[in-house]
Image (cartoon, rainbow, N blue to C red):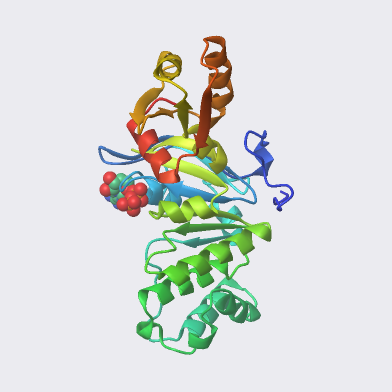
Length: 319
Ligand SMILES: Nc1ncnc2c1ncn2[C@@H]1O[C@H](COP(=O)(O)OP(=O)(O)OP(=O)(O)O)[C@@H](O)[C@H]1O
């Protein structure tokens, strides 16, 4: 499997072959009694991207991650991680690093010692401990006992733990938990560095602004199902808005009618029309406006934020 670099990272809409997928989930379900935590979930993540994994509380993100890490078995469906089926996690676990919920440490050992113990157990070279401590910015606190660490420092140590095996794929569940704003910026840079080394990162977070800045790929979950899986650009471009200024009310009404007939929501704001639609519909709108005689209009394109896209997706708004 060839990891994607800056040059080979998939472009929006590019066809992605199955063997270039780091994660491929097909119809995966996990039921806890009558509760369907994950319900026929299908999505994929290509190699070499940072994939944001988002969804409201209880959407099934952690349950999915637990299945991908081989911690629980699915009720139905299949998935592959690095090309190997999740029914045989020992085939791929040595190549992945995971951080899920609050990682467990030995509180009475130092951060460095915790990593040394894990390196020993996992058969990783001891020099990795220094490298990962430096990478997460904990080198000068490495000698301190973990029980004296702040929440953010424990999160950093958790990321260091996940990096110990120099994994091809990193699965991080809420890694920004407890990090201060500087820590979040540093984490973002660290993730980009790892991606640029060719690694794939699946990252769940409630901080949509953060995910928006760092994700190449997005998987959105709601009630155990994927409501979107694809390049991040596609989503925000698709969910944008057009702000139309017209020379007079007749032309404005003509434009409003074209958009309404197309099924898009149209509102008036400060004398302009606000059309919620894919931003690439601007060309079609201008053409049709001209045909109907609205020749003196200006169309501004406004891409939606990830938050707006996410909310619209959850409401099942017109695409
Ligand atoms: N072991 C379990 N037993 C019973 N129900 C569970 C179990 N684990 C998860 N659930 C339920 O499955 C659903 C999905 O939970 P999950 O933790 O996967 O969601 P999540 O998307 O990670 O949520 P959050 O963003 O709040 O962490 C929830 O309704 C949860 O209560």
